[in-house]
Image (cartoon, rainbow, N blue to C red; front, side, top):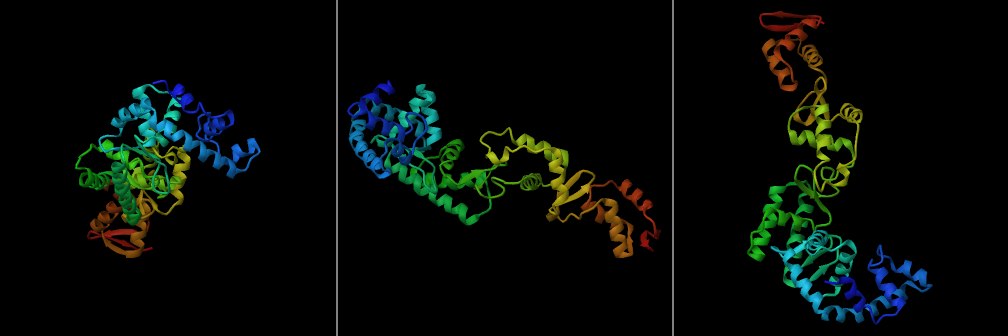
Length: 349
């Protein structure tokens, strides 16, 4: 399909200024330009440019609708909206670009044609949706209704939701309205239409402004890594996991910020949410872990209890600190003012 020639044919009856306005407003000469930018270049008012654009589109739209080559193209392109009947703009244009071997400029023209074609539905983004395409009005209404329900589900729940649960919710909607059972990848494509929803590297979906979906600081990233691992980790291991996450595709940009290992260790030291379990190893305070080294905790408990069963003390310490029993005995011997009587430890300090 000779896309540039079709564009020239569609715009053939416009004068040079009218062509320039259309090309600039729809990004067909580069970046999309505002009404104000174009108005300033012609020494006209913004409203005058808006009126001209409206009039020109009313002339162009019937020509686009009546262009058989375009109608045939969009009917072919609809196959890339299946099996659900809708796709985010970015994914749809990428698919047709690959299939029809179209360059970036050609895809911009195709998008322009799609805005006014009666063969395909283009939905411009708003507060809830990003730009997306649907093969027909029925598919558009179904996906819009289903995604609104899912969006408000996220608003009500607030906390991120595991991907399996999100897939289950949207699959139920699709099966109810379309009687189809798409694969997971197609359902995730549909979720991408929601503007304010994203997923983190651990496959939890939620509102983009949630600190565990698009974290704004290193502390939140460390916390989430420990939460997902559900066990204390050495700070080097935390750093390695953070670096490995950056290799994941489609990662929110906030996860791509680079940190050095000293910055990470400083965060672990200065925030009370993190507890030193053993030399270099940290866990979460919410797990019931007690700050300080094993030796410091032994000393603290002895000072508080004054007398305690040796085995009971070991069980308490091993619950909160990663320590061998042999090390526990060594620390006991190093403590002053402690003696053992009949299996009990007595503090005389």
